[in-house]
Image 1 (cartoon, rainbow, N blue to C red):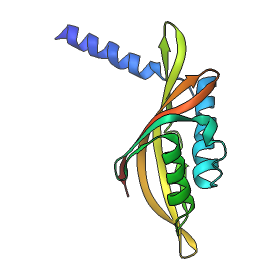
Image 2 (spheres, rainbow, N blue to C red):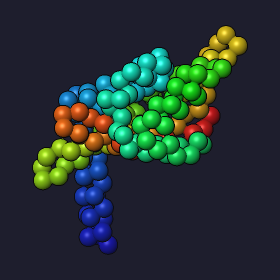
Image 3 (cartoon, rainbow, N blue to C red):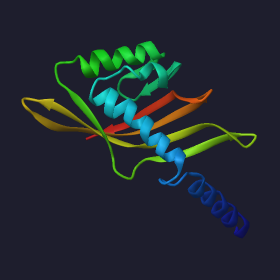
Length: 159
């Protein structure tokens, strides 16, 4: 029993300490990429930079909307549903919810996982109305010198 407790303590300590601190450069990179995808793209409908930060073979899994495959389909979905719909939607990252986990191969950084929570609101009848809160997980892959959003999970949407 004691060995199991020690093993569990070791595993939990590795999980806790494997994420990077919010002062780390990788965390700052993740925050910048998050802003490009959501603050500028999703909220302001400026999708011009999506071509350089979204992987051609993106897979986006949404617990309410299903699967979106590919950069073109993802960009069109944002353009037509978020930016082109009758009611504007905005997304805000929940403060202090974002965590970043680096992924290495032979001690070389090749990707990172970004996870967190975000809130949504809809502009309807002249005011912003609170929408759902959801969790998200994004796999970012280093492609040459550029980070590309490769896999996305958006789940646990609730009011």
